[in-house]
Length: 173
Image (tube, rainbow, N blue to C red; front, side):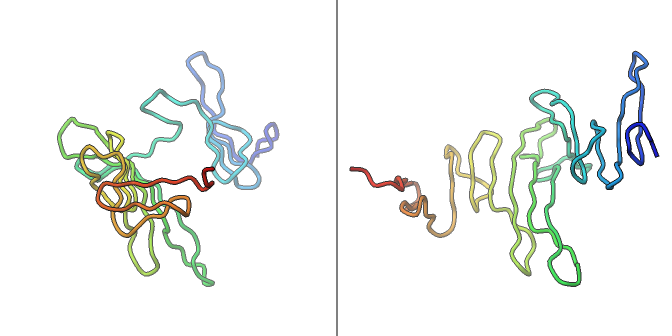
């Protein structure tokens, strides 16, 4: 117990100048903080962004480099009265190719239907193209939607192979 900070556990280190820096804190509620001595939630991470290619949190896969592998975050919870857990959704940042030295990547969003495995529902490719129910958006397209009609604003629909109709939800005079 650390009477100074009111925490159960505080791990510290020293910087190059010898100043003590709090690294990890677990408070009396069980909340864990990294970069903060006052965590507000179960895991509270505080730190500065490290430039355009790194964030505060870095999630990387240790898989061999190849297409469709990378860091992911799964989201889920209890799904029955017995307290069993299931994954409901996933966010994946993955390598877009299998070329050695090429780090082009995509961001994909996955969801799971009852009784099924997770499936990719949307992808943003390295050049900005977006695919909905389409893992390989058409070259030159910024938006590629596959499967059924899609209603926009309750009025417009995606019709045909390349047409997109968007209407305002407020009628024009």
